Image (cartoon, rainbow, N blue to C red; front, side, top):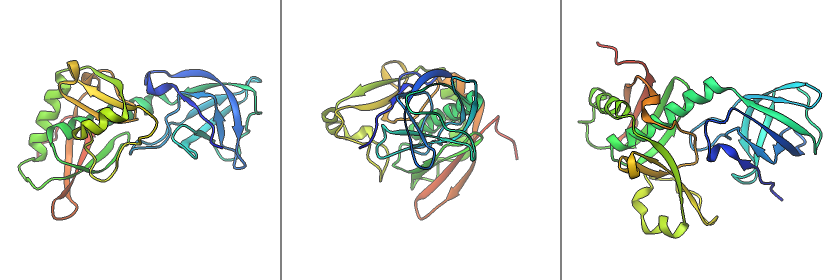
Length: 247
């Protein structure tokens, strides 16, 4: 039977530390807690890394965070050879915040690209300094210069980014909220998490379980470094931090 971890990051992406109780330790040493600030690999965003501190002061590096039998079962993977805690004990958690914050900035920027290029998303991968979003886009007018310019317009607009929850029925009644061509958000739980951008979600609103910044201005300088053709109409837009480099 799958265990459930209260995913604190779904309500507050800025939590850097927390305390939790150990629910279970797998045969491979994966640690399942009653609550966590560690995001688990999903939706193109990598899981968090950081540390877990035992009551006796032992500091254990967390090398990865993944999901178990369900999205609600979050497994913290200690570095190879590290100690594991006792079931029922209390631990202190701390994520690698600089890494997480860069992932939040990048993930939010990917949402903005999907606004600028309103075409089906065929894939995405978020990384600290070079992310990508793949689009089923036949129109070649969406150049890296144009998209970079519009991307920075939205960043400078410093639009609020927030989440809200809707029911399965509300999502079914608004299929346009789903931008992914091949992957549907999980249903059957009774509610779907939307990430919204702009006052009253005027810029964007789409199902997403990832972590994002609170305002687009926090993304900072960012641009499209390259556009790669991945099929007759599929194009990969690569996002990189920093200003556009001429030439």
